[in-house]
Image (cartoon, rainbow over the protein chains, first blue to last red):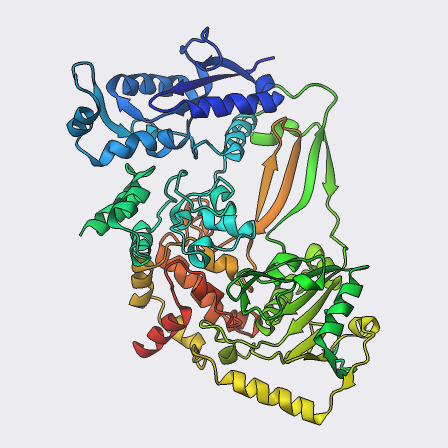
Amino acid sequence: MNKLRLGFFKYSCCMGCSYFFAYVHKQVPEVLASFDFVFIKLLSRKGTPEGPFDIALVEGAITEAWQVDELKMIREQSKKLFAIGSCAVIGGIPAIKATMPELEVEKRVYKNLSSIHSIKPHAVDTYVKVDGYIRGCPPAERDLYEALTAVLTGRKPDFPEYSVCIECKLKGNTCILIAENMPCMGPVTNAGCGALCPSMNRACYSCFGPMKQTNAPALAKKFKAMGISRDDVIRKFTEFGADTIEFRKAVETYED
Amino acid sequence: MTGERTFQKFKRLISKKAFLLWLDSLKKDYKLIGPRYYRGNQAVFKEVDSSKELFMEYESAMLSPGKLFLYKPQEELFRFTFNETSNPPSPPFSKRGMGGFSSKKITVDEIKPDMAKQVIVGVHPCDVNAILYLDRTFLGAFKDPHYEARRKNTLIISLNCTHVGGNCFCSSVGAGPFLHSVGGYDVLLTDFESEYLVEIKSREAEELFGLEGRGAGRDEMRFKAEKEKAMQGKFRKTLNVSGLDNIFAENMEHPVWQQTAEEKCLSCSNCVMVCPTCFCYDLRDEMSMNLKTVTRYRCFDACLDIRFAEVHGGNFRQSRAARLRQFVAHKLDQTNQYGVFGTVGCGRCITWCPTGIDLTEIAEELRTKN
């Protein structure tokens, strides 16, 4: 039986997406049956990063020059390439440093900079074209299935592009931003998590990153009116989305 | 009940305690749904175990009962399964998408409409009017079987308002604070301190209602009218509805749209989700990982969502301003759709908008700067 060749590549991240993928494939035996795991570091040290791949999943932000070269090679060898997890999709946690000069960040962490070759952190789609985004930290289970089943059946995957608010209302939650005055990032955050935090009475912290064309400055203004300090508002928009145009706008308008 | 003509058997004064006990007696055959305390004067419509849990003095609930228990936020419509004796088919199936499945047998499992009987108590006049609006969509030329089944099996007990919220403007559009619609609900309650004035409006409710109480005469009806008049004076928000249709049509490019979209609108769709009359839904398919079962379900869609008007090759409402205009215009314009306004004046979209966009202010701006 010709199984689809799958490669899972990791750059700057916590490897949580590989871990989540491993968890899913243990739970859903069909994943195991339909794919040939050619390369996935977490599961096997025998794997080889040589292509071709039917599906490549890339986790982590790009923060070193060698990663760019390898990523371009993988793209050339893969029929479908998906960015998985917030780091690969929007820059995520590694991109927190995106708002600071590179040398300042390095000096803050390391005494000896001779072995440090990092570059500005960027999402995977800054360097190569991607076929879809499996957002989240950890990634959404539904979106991961969607990507895998789409590749198996040869159709275009459908990922949500609306706000967390829609999912939150579908679940019947009362809005915590209005009713409890919590600084919830839901209105500007892309859906996919099933409104996990707001359902647990916690404010969304935008781990899925900005929704397309969102109006982050307007929400930043609302937070300001709620009495949240300037630093806290900036932190909210730079925790995951520091390298995104949408959230950068919020930070910029706030500063003047 | 739907389709029921004007029917008014009796008006009675029943003590609140006796009325709530009667509600409990319905629990044998009906699911009891009503407002439960959330915080402040807010309630959430939920199924309750006993009438003791009800919070009848509530001012407002974020999600209207009509869009929770008649038209569901999310519901499965059917499933289809590919029958095979062999192992999961070897991928990739076909370059033409699902074409590879054509030779295999497909079984469709239809999900039958839910026939469980339910009673929704404490529905405010605006929400009853919103249900009547949903009826125009789902029980119009094409009858939605799921909605129809639930509508037929639901007893609606409306409750005239005793508070006017800061964002309520139902009196401006004739949807409240007291209910005047002819049919479409079963019982109407008016708060008379320790008693309810109970007006039975449907045959089914008459058969179920066994309480005697005191008969209500002309004096009580006059008292009710006085209460309504006193309520009318409490509204802080109003909407001038005269000629709204033309005002919208003539101001498609008015700067208020661009300005509100840039300064306030997040296009988060909260307004659509909490609106009791918004009826748009999306159909989605979800495939199981073994590629054998596909579930088709529908869930609320929102015109503020960027994908809403996206079609092959483009998007009719690419800009946030266009999407905001679509929502506001559907509420305050487009009376040509059903002959009534799309708004019932509940003010939910104003209350729950994170940045406080107010559609009555937008309408006023269009009028003054016209």
